[in-house]
Length: 105
Image 1 (cartoon, helix red, strand yellow):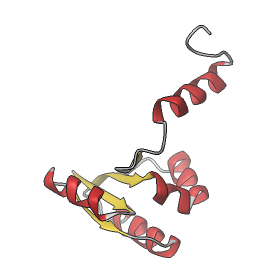
Image 2 (tube, one colour):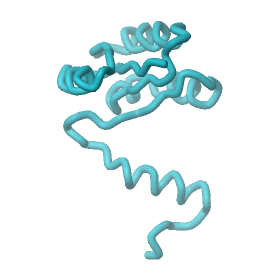
Image 3 (spheres, rainbow, N blue to C red):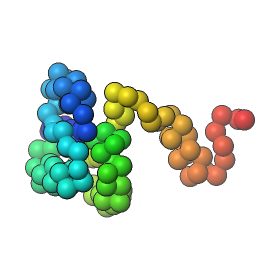
C-alpha cells in the first residue's frame, strides 16, 4: 500500500519524499481535485496526506469524501509554517462531541 501527498509547498513535498512518500504540489482548486481523483482511482494508494491549505481550498469536497468514502484514508497535516493549532482543534472536536470542555478548566 502506498501513501501519497497533495501539498501547497515544495518544502513539505521534499521532506516527505525523503521518507519515501511521493506527491504533487498544487495551488488551485481544480488541480487539487484532479490530483485527489487520480490518487483515489489508484487501488494501491491507502493514505492521502494533504496540507491544511489544500484542505481549505475545497473543504466541502474533502469533508464529503471523509464521511462517505472508506478508502483511501484522507489525512490533513500541518505545513512547515505550523499555523494550525492541531491540538486545540482536536480538543474542540472532542468537546463538541462529548458536550463538555476538556482539561478541567
